[in-house]
Image (cartoon, rainbow, N blue to C red; front, side, top):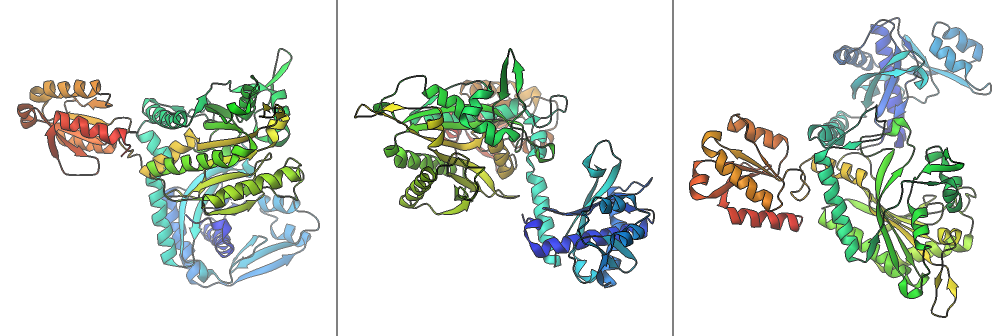
Length: 583
């Protein structure tokens, strides 16, 4: 979906349309006063003080009608330069504009934009005429505190979007509808996957039984793959001494994204934002020979990071998440092969889970930034060239991103493009020469000398939370059978005659480790079938006279209207094949 702020022409168009909105509101509500009307990624909004009037979704239609009338009238939009005195006089009856003017720097030019009988304080730029603003849509209305401060008055915020053509607008609106259908927060609520509670805390989701089944399946899936590759899984505490993060360098480089330290018994502890310092300490617990390396330490680890409340989003952006984390301690000679193994693991997982729209980014440091990055030019040049070489030898297409590296080393990020919304990082692999030195990690080389190893930080799922959000939106909650919380829903045609046989099948499937539900409610067959579809259960079994007499099973797959009848053994064999092979 398009990001309005990233397109200069669309940004100007949408900001101009925000003024068109204010113009129409002023006609309909003469006492209205206006705070700000900025462009946002999704279009624009305007914060408005309407006194005792309250705008509802139904009122958007009449505002739209007035906006179209003004747009059709083809009013020229003129830029006006003002002195501070002129601006204060012009907007003397509007306390919100007065506040803006008083908070401007003395050297700042003050400008306003006028269209017919409406004038508004604004830096601009704007389009030349209102006729260019006819392809818009008002999307919603909500409340917003003046200046975002809960101590201030609540203003009414109207959202909208504008495009140059009606075709572009219609296409965007279709995408918005698609996004609503895929919204993981709505699907999560509808399917009882997770919940949030302000009493527990913002950004702290809780997984319900259905959601935790998916969680466990994903955890077991990735851990099984890691075990086959020689990973050793550990369990470490979700907090640590502040000194641990000072040693690692995270305290200096990452403190603003961490929760505040807690003082207990003379020590300072902090909720951990990442797991690498703990894993460094696990490695240093023993003396290692070059023969021991590579050592692959894996953990599904609970981390806590401070996210601004406005950035929180369901289980996609949270304040606590479980990282699918691993740290590979290797010799310099092993970097190429281990890095290749990580890339191949990512590609294998993406293929099995049908993730197809993605690309690779090689994130490098900005040599001019002397604050963000660990200062060692030789280390950085060596590490970055090493990753380039490996990617080139693997024939991996990638783009380089300057200034996107971790503070301790370059990294490979895998950017996925979801069905809706902007792309984001799902998987990552980071090369680190820095932390092993900070924690004095060593191994005894074949010549008997102590050497410093290299660490690869990698996460295939990223966090299980975000990965689940991605899967929910990609599948619209219609999970593949191996992930579905309920895999089979048994529906007896008539409880009086068919419940006993349905119970027999239920127990048979349970004994074969199938997640099965028996719908024995006294409801009509059609109602039960519709509910099975609503809950997106992969298989619905319809058991009636024929099935009971012939000792068979009739099933219907989610999304299909066809009914298939097979023997019990055939059905179980088919299900096991689908589940085991992740079909």
